[in-house]
Image 1: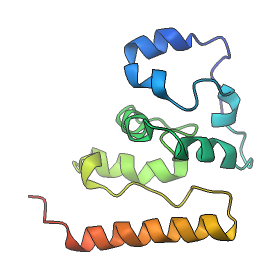
Image 2: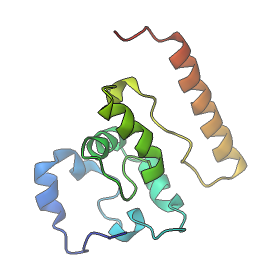
Image 3: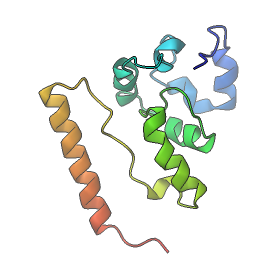
Length: 131
């Protein structure tokens, strides 16, 4: 996996994507969001959990079909089904956001993740059909 060079000009990218100025990752090392194979991305995912522009970041990553790194609180593996569904014509707004990647894995984090997944499942059962 290729990590973007540390010399990437954040201000230049932020001028093209204004939401990046609010990103929780803006002062973090880029390599943290592009972990080597087998390295747990837990710290990057935890940073995303606190980010006010997580949804915008995820929309960008799915729209760009980003196949590497952590974006919008998702790993490559979690984005693949979102990208496939979008390519099949299902807008991202009609797909449940993956939430199982968050937290450190301790009991309280697992409980919060499970509660969020239950909320999404309930919402999916009760939402109106999209035609």
